[in-house]
Length: 267
Length: 267
Image (cartoon, rainbow over the protein chains, first blue to last red):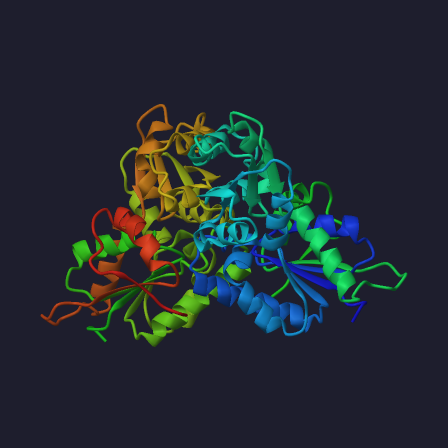
């Protein structure tokens, strides 16, 4: 089991930010990534639909005999996690929300937190619940930003229209006196500059990639699942649609060149 | 067969513009509409994926025993029509592109045409092919506008950001001297004002709804399929996801109140 790959999935290619961090801190692990680009975005859909889609991604990963499952998607982590854990049996499941919340609460001098995400993530209330559970004294404000995903996917990263839309969404936080903002969607780190510009004063921006990768390392170690072969690990990056068109944005999301080409797969 | 419903499908709720026109000119026909809102948008996806999705929508309609199939979606009309016709057997199939092209070419004084649409529609080259086939002398220029669908779905109809994005997309036509622009996506009529403002001079804007409804009437009459009952016809509007959230935008797309509520259905 130790030498099986880690399975990581997302609704699209945003979860590659997590893959990048895993490669950085766990360079000897084999990885299978699956982005469901034939049905992205998930964040605008109903819970029952998201759960059904998530279940199909888990089945794919189980057939690939992965040793751990990483839900590299805030939307699925928010609304489909219990189903994913159930379907995964004894295989450990790591989501992006729990490590991101813990990492955020460990920052110094943070009393008021903001969270931005897709409609499904924000409406689930999962960030508010998890933050309050850890520390009742913190204030949390959340805001839905549905157009951020399509803007990133179309490459409008540093565009005037994106700036207007961001400023409009984030003006909700103007009187909230935030100390920290959680980017509750794996696409959002690409809009970091635009988001920073929309705030009058400097605030801490937290994304899920690094906290999640650290959590994966901890879980693999705790379960004695660290790969112990010296041969080169295998990395497979699958999408359900449009591998060629997406490879440029994937490079951007990966913040550099992808280690292997995106391959199309049917699920 | 005459008294069976007309089946109309789209990737989302944009096709309701066509339903509205059918009700106007064929008020005695029963209608079944299906919008695949669980997997919208189709226009950014690969052809094989769009064809697979289209096939599933046809199966749904055949199970409902419709008397005619209307593909109220430019993307599916552009890349999946031959498959849809094959799967539909003897049932007549009406797409949105053929009637829209004919209607556009019948306008007076039109020599240079523009077409805007999704990536799949524009890249298929179907508009250029059909226009040139009818009249070689016409000039045709096409432009992909991928963000128009999510902007409409989020209700940013008359927003400054939408204006910037529109102006940016449509500046491609600045030196083309267009006489007419085809809105090659059923979502785009909602952006008519924004699109008009992006052009320096007045041009004719054509959308698919009315030409397609007229074509349906002609096909039903030609095939002796006009409903001959005097009882009230039945209208069913199905979506595969998020009926409640979409009903407001659906009213907007329908340009008034929907005749019946959107219902969720599994396909």
